[in-house]
Image 1 (tube, rainbow, N blue to C red):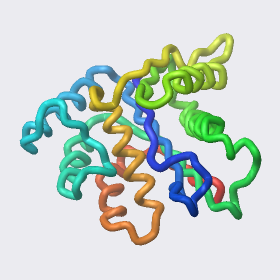
Image 2: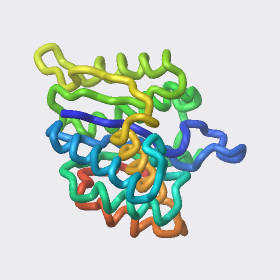
Image 3: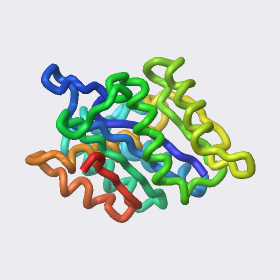
Image 4: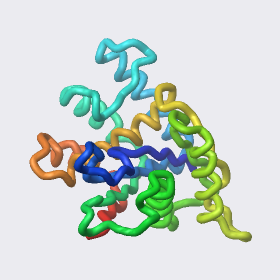
Length: 210
């Protein structure tokens, strides 16, 4: 089992100074390696179809509507499923010292979405985007293993760090996070259409706090 994790938005609370209103984390899960490989190859093929360079990166926030639709339609037939969590950073709803530290906030959010996916996880290999603070990513890996693994049951077998620029399925996780994040914001163009394309792959998306 392969699990890819990425986020949309940021864990900062200073919305009035540019932080995002929502922070979203997605988990994209492939139960079979062969299916993950097939999806990976399809994304490679899509670059050729778009006339892109082989090392070009798909990124939901930066891509055009045309590319977003092409990407989502290309991956939709493959057998993966996803979970998501959206943190509403409305100061009237979210308070507590723990949320003021971005690293603690990020780890807590990841922990919540992994708890929601607990029933599906089994000896999973987790792939995290390597970009950013490497020491923090290692802390996150340790935190997830400690939170999810029990003495007689290892839901997480291994945590790997790879750069999203070289990993198509981390780019898929970025897209899923972007689609979810966009869909819960009012007035965002094409938001419902994007989510509808991959809706059959969705297991559970939690919005917290309500």
